[in-house]
Image (cartoon, rainbow, N blue to C red; front, top):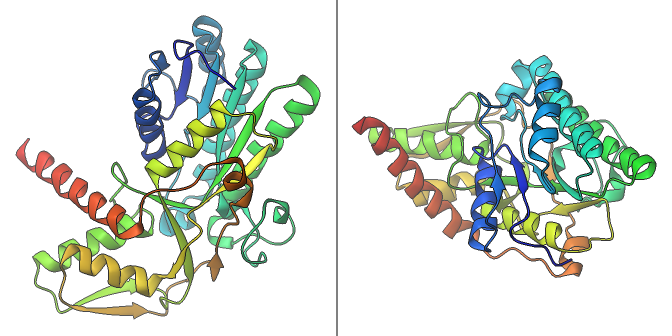
Length: 316
């Protein structure tokens, strides 16, 4: 589907890890009319504010990368916030897309919406075939509701949308707050601080045995652009690297990238989460998309960004 690169595209959540990467990808491809708003400028939880924005600005295409996100600690401690904020954000955006006749919506989901014990690798049809992982159930239910809303609006109103079920994302712009971060930035910051302290050990939650798949955020952004520009014959597609490794192996790789020389200690009294989560991304790969950034290269780039961002904050 050829797009006019001057048409207005609203990227919701443009300051986040994914949204900022999508803006970079679209700008580098020559898109000149990206519409963005900070949360202070437009609270996506506010139905009236979102409706007024869409009516006034009339975006032609929308990428909804805005969401309340966090790691296992935040999801476990603040389930009410996660389900409320995500339901509100996506409901307001999707409804305004319908009302104002948006041509295409790219909605960002996550592979955490699949059952905890889904068959591996996880295919799109495994959705709703079993219980969810309890530690992120509230977030997962909200994102499932967004997908179902997109499906319902496609059937009743003809809203064209594609939901991207992303695997674990990482990269420049990630959140390194130990309470709110996902596994890669959390391990990277802990390894960095352990290196600075010349610590002999670094403690990691869980047994280290769960297997995880990781995708650089710029590859995710490439997938979003691909689906925006292509006539995708599916309403949802998995987006992953196709490779997996254990948390223990990931921690060892991050230790090497950071340069920490100490021992990794695993606290088995802490939860592991889902034992394995590998996405089958053959639908999207079959249409012509594929990831390009190797994990080690992506981790090194992410660590360089973390150091630069940290130095910038310290210099202020």
